[in-house]
Each structure stands twice: as structure tokens, then as C-alpha cells.
Picture 1: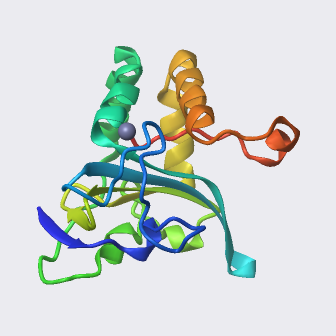
Picture 2: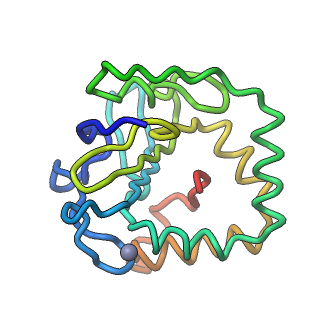
Length: 186
Ligand SMILES: [Zn+2]
């Protein structure tokens, strides 16, 4: 694992700078070597070269573990079996490369280009103002998002939706505008 500068893809899309607070507990992320994760779901309008954020958040490691614990054992098992059966493309980390964006150019499951995809999710791991490059960052394309979401139990999907609603409350009048989408990258 290597520590590298935070790739801009993981910046807060509103401030265009690294996330500063855990979306769940409000803890300061950029200080004291805080260990945290950033996850984003992006709708990609390839034709118009624009993007829309479906959700994005930074979450500290303790809050992330807590959220992960609510997933049913059955869903975790199904997800592992799904990934195991996929034979994903090899992942080559270049320790010389400071900009780790190359690691999120393709879907980690299918190997397809996420720049050409209608929707994708990315996840990264961070320590303070540095990105941890190794197992993460990763990207997942639309097809894999759907397939992963299919293997999750209804209860897990409900729990994940509750989690997203808790950290990113959507005003009820706008709810229909947001695609119903839950994280698949835990
Ligand atoms: Zn937290």
C-alpha cells in the first residue's frame, strides 16, 4: 500500500476540495491521520460530457464498520460469491504514479471503461489528506452495480437505503428526481 495525494475524483463536488467531515458522526477527517472512505455514485451523460452526482459521502472507519455490520451475513456471502465467480481483470498498482486516477478508469468487475458508462460508483480509502492506494481506489460500472445489487437481500437493500437517506437526506418533494440507488461497494 502507498500513500498518494487525493485524486480529484474523490473531492467534494460542491467545494472541489477534499471532504472535511464524516457524513455520519461529523468527525474532522483531514486531521490526526483519520482513517476514512469516500464513496460516490455518478450518473454519466457521455453524449453531453456532463455528470450528475447521485450520492457522495465521506465516512470515518468506525462509522463505516458500523454500517457494514448491519448487512446480513447472507448478503455478504452472496456478494463474495458473485465477485469470486466474475474473474475480474488483474489490478496493477504503479508505486511511482502519484495520480491514482488510472485505477478508477475501468470497472473492477468487468474491466469496461467507466468513462463510457451510463452510471458508475467509485470508492477510495484515505488517511488524513492522503489517499491509500492498494486495494482501493476502485470503480464499478453500471452492469456490475446492477448484478451486485441483485444478489443483495431485500433487507440489506432497505438497510443501505436507510443509511444513504440518513447521511444524505433528500427533501421529500425532490425524492422522485433522485434515482433509487444504494451503495454496492461495501
Ligand atoms: Zn464517523
